[in-house]
Image (cartoon, rainbow, N blue to C red; front, side, top):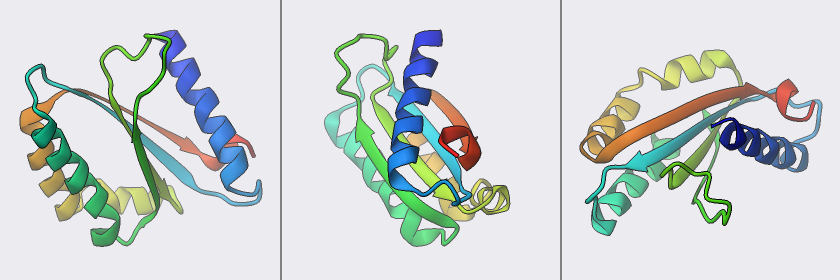
Length: 128
């Protein structure tokens, strides 16, 4: 578990240093999903599509990236999807969390989700 967190934080540090100048202050909201056994590729795509729509629905999301795990290390503990959301502030994230479109996404995800891991990092902890 510690190795997973260390790898995640090192990746965030590297990405953060490349993506933004050190004077930028943002909040990175990192979400990892592990899907239930038996979840089909079509169901996973439905979740991906719904999550990808959120930046068009919630103006407080300033940046959005996502991808699937391809690490050969074997420390993923079954987590396959990682989503990076960038907010200008904790206040913007506070708008996002209870937002009706975020809640609607949770209803799409819920039937297929086995585990979720969420961490948030202010800009100064990822390279500033």
